[in-house]
Length: 563
Image 1 (cartoon, rainbow, N blue to C red):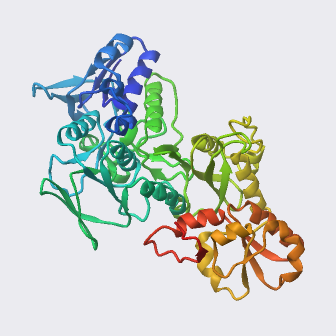
Image 2: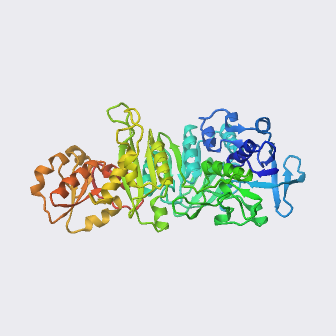
Image 3: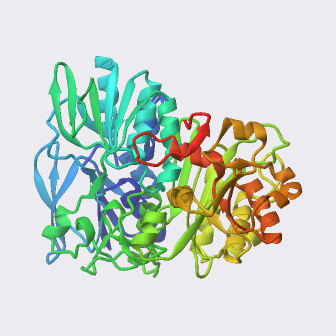
């Protein structure tokens, strides 16, 4: 059996290695247009920042190492220019010699990846870059070494945009980050992204949200971006990080079935509409594991799994890919931000009736030195308590909690199941009640009617209610630092002694710093016949969101400036 694989990196290289382990007699040919067949594409920004110092560290396998270990014929600088399904051949151009030839196959694995989007308003310039390949990385690094730019413009606030912005800062370059939407990192909800906004600004990056670039031109020894309704931005260099699209022109010409944004449609075995052609990686349409809807998830994890599954099926093992939930993590200076499953926007689009809880939890026991807090938001179905998604921003242990919740989503667990998870505990690593367990408890309290909650989004409605009372149960010092306009302050430990001063005809909206003491206060109030609601996330979370400039959110804070 002869298998030709178009494209290396995560999907194609994994398919080649797996297939060899399953079938020693197969003839395997990998065609790679670039000069590197298997490289750490997720590590590219960190080479630019000098964290990864050696170019060789980015290369995971070379054609020689693939040949020696796996007996795979890897041909770099070899571009597949046409697929001929009827003849079961691929037309290949040797990019060094310019010569073309045909390569036959019994089975074909199509793994071309995705290409960086370059909007039509961008002028060609040696000062404008994308970051998708090793070659891109070296071009950026060479430019920085030779031209010594003092400023950079990054357009796009996703993974590549933020990671590259951070690493440019590490190189001593002043960065302006322009994002079309009202937030960076679309997998996160707006309120969770506000934590990232604060860190970005803290590090000196100029962040322009809700800013549409209409032109990017070379001018005066640099680049100039025209921004709709705002002043133009000049920099010495620019990075485009506005997304990727599946690179599927060959598949379209070959008549393979295509789906959203031109991605290749496959079955669960990664087989395309042609039974002898498989497709994997960023060019493939997948199903969202939570909703079942068609999706594009250009991440390394799914690509590796799909490559393995394609190889299994070619070798006669009926493996299936059950969909992706988009589990991801990124480093943003000292912060770690991770997410899995649905966010609020995705749940709404899917027509799922959902709610969420926000916790402010330490990563390990607070009496053990070095504990830091993380903000954990968990989305769940109102009807059944099923876990739909989660986001977490913090320092230590952030991705650990998202990994646990990602597993819970894959297993179809509910909030009650979270409370029953038997997770590792020792003071340096966690608490006896892990934040994941705590999320289950908080959801359970909501679902079982022990407490009501309101969020920062509800504040405009609440302040307009005639019988609403804002009750702040922070300490007096905390209250003096920041509180809602018109709120009354009764510290939680003094609440029982002051119940007689409260009016049972009123509705009490209770807040504290993090949401824990206000929950305790709500239980006291409810037990004594008062109507009440707990403020999700507490004052510290509201201050982050309300401190976001130019977002139109009403401010109700008194005391300390909300920044």
